[in-house]
Structures are given as C-alpha cells and as structure tokens.
Length: 172
Image (cartoon, rainbow, N blue to C red; front, side, top):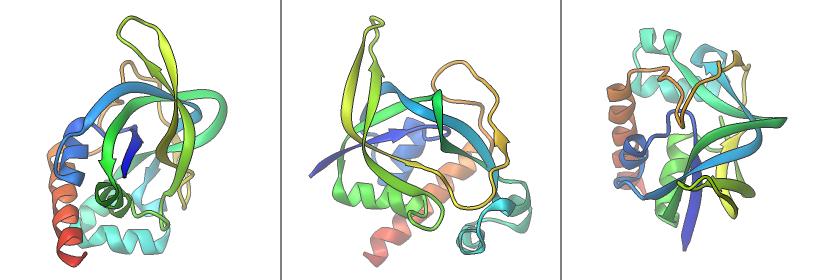
C-alpha cells in the first residue's frame, strides 16, 4: 500500500531519507488548523525521555528541543507531503517519532498543496503527527519558507535517524 505523510518542522527530505532509507517524492503543502510549538526533551513524558536517552548524551537530553504540531484554529504549518510511502516505511516513521508514546498519528486530514504557479489544491488522506504528550514549551516563532530554523544539530539528527532505522529493520 502507498501512503502519504505530511512532514513539518525539521522533517526535511534529508531527514526523511535517513528515517526510511530513501528520499520519496514530495510537494510543498500547508497543514491548516495547527500551529507549530517547541517542546524541550526534559518536558516530555518519562517513557519518551528514557527511549530518547539511548542515543543521546545527558547534555543532549538537557538541551534538545523539537517542533510539534498542536491544533489551533485559523493557524497553519508549512511543510511537505511525502508520497509513495510504503507500509514498512510508514512504520519506520512511527518508530522514529515514538508513535503512541510521544506523538499521535492522525490519518485522513486534508492538506492544502501549494503549486509553483501559486494555485492550491486539497489533498485527502495525508498522515501527520500532532498533539504530543508532555508539556509544551512555547509557540515557535514565525519563519519564512517551508522549514523553520533547526533546533538541533542536523548531522546528529541524521545520525540518530539512521541508527533508529537500522535497529528497527534488524528487529522487525
């Protein structure tokens, strides 16, 4: 089965490639009805912190922040819709995002796609994560473009995503 996934925050094509092992096709999109927040690792639930600590130093655990989507009428989050995601690749995304422990997966949300000519279309059945467990830190500042400024070391994010993928594939 082929799935679509809405990536936001730091879910760049490079990070998506590290998570699933390839860079899928994608289009610019906007997730309507949500606002971008940041969350400190120390504000996440204990089970999530325990899992994240496996691949992070104590210093990284103290200083790490992540972008999360939170329902907010009238707001929107820019990002990318990744297309042609297999069920196994979708499971890899859920594994990396600690699906069910930290972030909840939503299916079937309508996503607005903004085309290069400025026109927009609605896309149904795109998947995304939102409403994280733990304490939200603060709304993310406004930014230009599709992706906000990185909250963490991009190379380290790619390394952790690759480790998570390899471990998941070895165990499943």
